[in-house]
Amino acid sequence: MNPRRPARALFATSNGFGLGHVTRCMAIARRLPDDVEPIVFTLSEALPIVRAQGFFAEYFSSRDASGESSAQWNMRLARRVGHLLAEYEPAVVVFDGTYPYEGMLEALRGAGVKRVWCRRGMWRAGEGRANLMFEPEFETIVQPGELAAEEDAGVTAGDRRGVVRVPPILFSDDSELLPREEAARRLGVDPGRVNVLLQPGWENEAFGPSARLCIERLARDARVQVVVAVSPLRSRAVPLPGGVATVSTYPLASVYRAFDFSISGAGYNIYHELIGYGLPCLLIPNAGTPLDDQVGRARFAEHAGAGRSWDSNSEADLDRHLGALLDDASRERMAARARELRFENGARAAADVVAGLAGAARGQ
Amino acid sequence: MDALRRLYRWLVRRVPPRAAWALWRAAMLAAQRRRGRVAGPTIALAQLAWGASESELATLVERLADGAEGDPGHLLVISDCDAVHVAAGRGVRLEHVPPREEWRRRFPAGDYDAFVERRLRSILASYRIASLVAPDGVPERVLRAVSEAGVPVGASQ
Image (cartoon, rainbow over all chains, first blue to last red; front, side, top):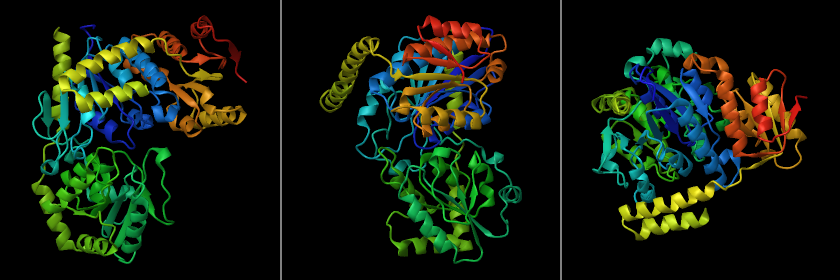
């Protein structure tokens, strides 16, 4: 490595269904010190979003998109990662995902780079045990914090050797959120009304009917204005009822203060944003994900009083939850509980880990 | 790969974690040696598309996909345009190369054409490409990399 140039950190993200992995990587990367240059290597169609955030980015199509055998795809991936290591000479490679790809590991073995696995917890009970076998492939495992940790019955819960735990990771700090008036102006909504942000979980096919039901119910209250978050990933477009206002901005949290509550999935990033920024919420967890225990996460929010969880499909339950969220005093209580649960953004601590490894590599 | 998957499941269920990892690693190294002999996907036609906007890339992908006989997965576009969803939406393969300006901002002392040449050599070695179409203005050294890889080069239509 050339000692006169900044050390480089290559952030490799798995595809996933949405923006979770790549958002976590960017959250860490944007907090690196000036003497560590981040490069984002993504398998996600979010490439333009990554570039728009000012990162130098590389893309490689995910296996789902390429329709070839696993051996062929891993061969190509190993070749590409090897090419990137030769071109950019990173000191550290950070992989964010739950299952490290064999082609990537193959290229990293013996490459002389520090390897970090950024692996969120809260896996569904009994699932993913096999994934832990890859732990010895990494020098460090960074586990982003989980507010619902007490509900975590998965295999990554508890103390595991070599795991560095940091507080929950968010892309934006609280200070980066726009004030309500400005956020409302940007969205074209009236800040004097009860503004509701509907954030469908992109991977949750059941969310569509639930969302439509919520929109129907909310339309009965003249104070309410609903805005639906449309994924900036164009292949994730979902059909919407006519006349619904939409927002497609990144990071979406920048306009959270325009809203009085949100109806959302319970994926890691959205969940910690909602509670971290104190936005009351109705969570509709996706019980069908392979690893992510969204039901446990949503349950914790309800027990803690910071949100509501609707996983029963009962319309009577939905009416009860929406009634609570449409009540000003009840909503204020939820926001107050969320403020009590407030946490430091763990992205900086994770960046410190990466920078420390990069610095150590430079010193060698 | 199915055999590897079966081995993986067996190790996880039956063998203590440290031993499982050691055995898995040995199996992976063996697979890695074999992978060196795995042939890349077959590509009937590859097209270089430098400096294309999203709409130009979409038009190109449509034209290629509409004109393809059989699986559009046998078509490959190599481009510096980041609208990668355009190709995925039609089942056409896309290899992205960072654009010149962005690359130069990050590596001001580097030679972009040499970088593209190295990237192209890596891509060409990852597939079995029957022919490649290059637009006018592609640097000579890039075209040389293509012909040295034994891929016939055609002019852009």
